[in-house]
Length: 372
Ligand SMILES: Nc1ncnc2c1ncn2[C@@H]1O[C@H](COP(=O)(O)OP(=O)(O)OP(=O)(O)O)[C@@H](O)[C@H]1O
Image (tube, rainbow, N blue to C red; front, side, top):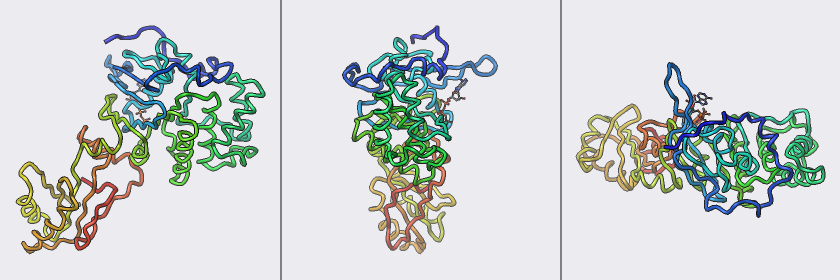
């Protein structure tokens, strides 16, 4: 593996000095099949007592142009470190990456000119108006007064904030503020926009607003969006996603394809006697199928779970075991994570509702996760 020596990590302040005199015209962007492509990307840090922490450990990623790509993983998985390398703010320890057709190691400044970056912490001035914030940043990016005015008006329109352009930022809602921060990253017309947890700390309504804004960006401008998130339901709405855990890629693909690869639905039965019910269910299933009992009831995984429910209920009732509720849940992205790592992402899902099993008389196929 080729290891890179030399430059230390670049401070975010370097962004400002590397700003272009004017936004790169779309025709200036080099042609490349992928907006982002990495091979064997590694970032290591010295750890305690002479150890080495591999924050990112051999990442191979391909993100197509115009794609909305989610980067999903638990705390400390290596998401922010990956973004820092892809934006040429941190130098990879080994491996290679191209972003908007430019090599991050060979041409870090050119990469920074072609990307927008929304970090977790806001840097807009609450006492200035939305328009003033944008205008100042456009000037910092090196745009002329005239171009800065034009781009400010354009990105305000894209963010649906034109009517609030004269409002001080402190008077905007959380969702509006985040849209303003995204708009600020669009001033120099980047080919690829990186968003590090763009909805963390927002209420559900504001989160929905931000995602609506991101969809508009994609539809109107064909922007490539690379979004890190803890939220499974946000990753579900992206074209494709990668799951990262402890610096390593766990899975990559379209959400539906990843879930389909797991295949089996989760069936949960609540009965009058779960231990006896387990024996009955066990006899009906092929021997390779596990049947477990815990506080949530009797659980099993089978393809076409809802079709199994009437059969299971009939067999249990014939054995004198009352069935109080039954549910079949298609695989979730959490199941995909669990399948590959043996652990759940569920703990990182604030407010994730538990899906209660439906009464057995009306077997239901629910969409949200049910427990395992
Ligand atoms: N500058 C650093 N020095 C040493 N270790 C670091 C440094 N930056 C990150 N790490 C370690 O690298 C690992 C990955 O961190 P990173 O911030 O990329 O994860 P993350 O997936 O973005 O987490 P979160 O979702 O909590 O933001 C963690 O173990 C972290 O402690």
